[in-house]
Length: 228
Image: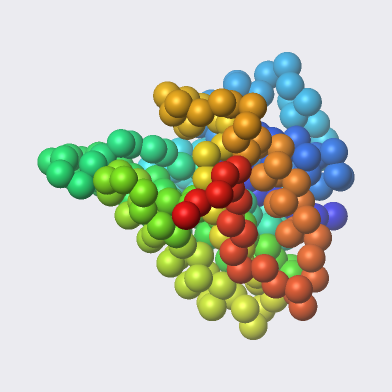
């Protein structure tokens, strides 16, 4: 049995990852804001799936989610932090409230959730944490400062998680895609068929989860175009 927590699983990349892993026989604990969203889906009433209410900005929510997962499955082997938001805050904008929301959801929420899951990932001996960071956490294009700041911080958090869990067999991978064909990319003048698809990212996640402790991959950069 391999039990994987996935935040942000109701749509986009998180949804694609959940579908792939369910097909591969994993046990899934899906944290979503609206559990009813999964009615009439492959996840509903599935014996290998727990659907748990999860609100990224609520400090009690990750505590309840991890407890419910352990109560149902008795163990935890992986955590995939997919939940995130985009606010188009430019460098010159006076929008500290929006900046606070970005850091709350994109940085502090995965920090809280991972800390709650950490003791059980240590017990696994092969715990896996996969953080959906972004290419915006590797470089800044244009003046979209707020989102990039949060993703740079998320990448730093990923490296801190790696250092903290290494001796207990925890391996942490930061996945950094450019534009992916999800709701977050809507409004960008790109052909949805020529950019990275959620299923592409899900395939990479599936591969990383299967790697042994001796084949650690710290970062995966994913792009659909050449950047100069």
